[in-house]
Every structure is written in C-alpha cells, then in structure tokens.
Image 1 (tube, one colour):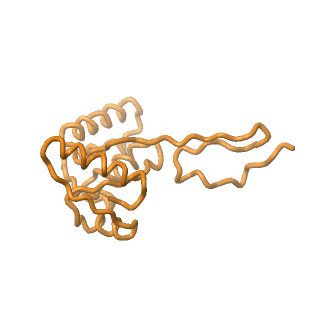
Image 2: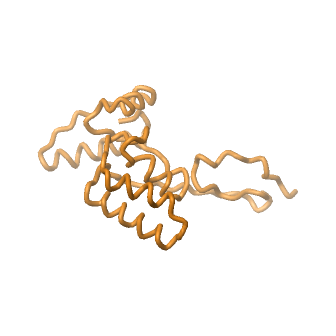
Image 3: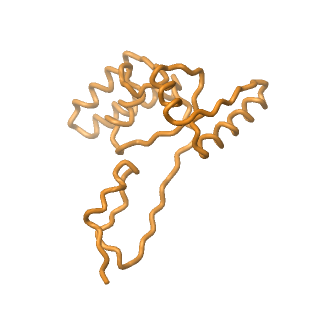
Amino acid sequence: VRGVKAHQDVGVLLKSAAAAIGIDLDLKVAETAVYTNALFRKAFSTAVGGTSAKLDDPDLTLGDYYVTDSSRNYAGYGNPVFDELYVKQVRTLDMVERRKIVWEMQRILLRDVPIAITYWSNVAYAWWREVRGFNPPVSFFHAYGYQEIWLAK
C-alpha cells in the first residue's frame, strides 16, 4: 500500500474484506518512491494505490494501464485482441465506430479483470464570485495553470 492515508484506508478495508472470506493479507505500507519502484518492477502480488485518468479519452485511460507493453501496465496484463482493438480505435476517425470498438475493449476488461478498481474519487472546486478566468480542470494533472485567473475587484 502506498503510504498515503486514502490508500492506506482502502488497504485496511480490503484486508478486512479478505479476512471475511478466510484470506489473511499482510499489509505493508511503503513510501511513494519504494511503492512506485515496486510497481515498475512488478515486485508485488497485490498493490493498493491510486492514479488519475489524465483526460477523458480512451487513448490515455485504456492505453496507459492495459496495453501489453505500456510502461504503466503495472499488472502485466497482456491480451493481443485488446491490443489490436486499441490500435484500431486510435486510428478510427468515425466517433460512432470508435465508440463501438472502445465498448468491445471494455467488455474484454470486464471479462479479464486485470485490475480491480475499488473506487473513483471526485475533486470539488469552489471559488468566490469575484474570481474570473477559472475553469475547473478535467483532472488534477491540469489543475495548476492559474495564469488566466484574476479578481474582479
């Protein structure tokens, strides 16, 4: 488990759920550098951590974590049919056809379950009426470009 409170909480919850069905998990907490190193080396049996979808596009979300040779495919998942569909959807310009391909990719992932996603978190934004030029970002990767924000006072 990555040494971040939210991830540790999920780890404790999953350990408890596993114990309820007779599985005893050894929960090890690691600081981020050690945890990330283990992910890249695939030196774990089960990992609890977090990440973010950078954009709401299948190229990044599905490509990063599920394409066989992706550097962020920490689970080591490999499915040649999925990989072929990934390349096909990248090259497809017709959005209706692309959606069908992505849905097929999702059906494959639902069948294979290479990663168990335990939760998605949302980020809420609030600001005063006088703040201008702020648009909530699509992900926290894009949350820190405040060059266009100003106060109308």
